[in-house]
Image (cartoon, rainbow, N blue to C red; front, side, top):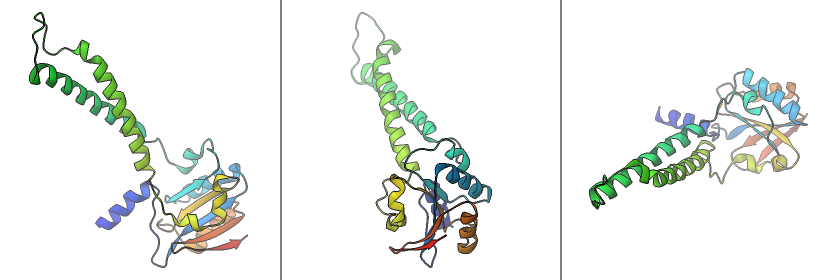
Length: 204
């Protein structure tokens, strides 16, 4: 039970598990961004959830086509900002009113007005740190190993190729049926990715 929960959490970060036979998933190559985004819609519409797209540049509308919804980084950033604000408020109160109080012309030991610069700076600092940390966490980074790295075709993902990967951990994954669906969606090549360092290329 705990293992399945961990696998589901990892899957939300794009880190997928291989099957017992070593199959990691299917990697389909598409000729242009239009066919890729159409394929992403079809894959999501077919009920697949453990899949991702890889392109040399951002494609407008891809998040919606994949059914990803709104990013959670904003909420993580908000939590960081609130933590920074709370920490700064406590710091100013503790140093001014508790640890080293000074009576200056009868002024209060702690006041909001002179504390605003520190409160602002810590709010911004922790917001930025939480945003970067949240981005890394939600993307499953750093990740030095990925079975996709062993695909020769995948080396072109940052140059001139457009890929869609469906993980074998998806509950709807079936090697033959999923490959057939990807080809019907316009894939010009579908590659079986293994988790032990090599892949098999099946040309369309």
